[in-house]
Image (tube, rainbow, N blue to C red; front, top):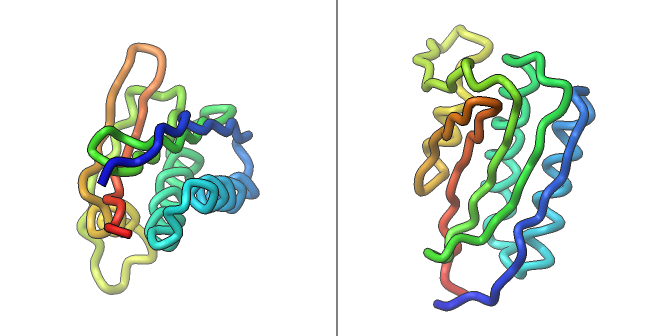
Length: 133
C-alpha cells in the first residue's frame, strides 16, 4: 500500500514528568491525523517507554519527539536526547523487579528499534508496521 507523503512531525518537551503523557498525546494526535488509528495503542506504549527512559536515565534539559512515515510504510517514532554516551539496552527483569521491562515491551510491539549515536546527541527510534487498511 502506498501512503500519502506526510511531513515528519516534531515536538520538543522539557525534562518534566508531564512530558511523558504530552509525548503520548502528541503521537496519538499525529497518527489520528494520518489515519493510522489501528496502531495507536502500540505507538502510545512505545513513545511512553522511550521518553520515560530519556527522562529517567539522562540529564538532558529537553527531549525531541519525531513521528515520521518511512518509505516502507512503517511509522518511525524517534526520541532524541543530548546524552549520546548513555546507550539503551534490553534488561532481563525478574518477576519481582519493579523496572527493566520498557525496552522489552518496545521490542515486542515494534518491527525494529535501535539507537543512532551522533557526537552531540542520540536518536532512539522504533518502527511500527502500518497494518493494511
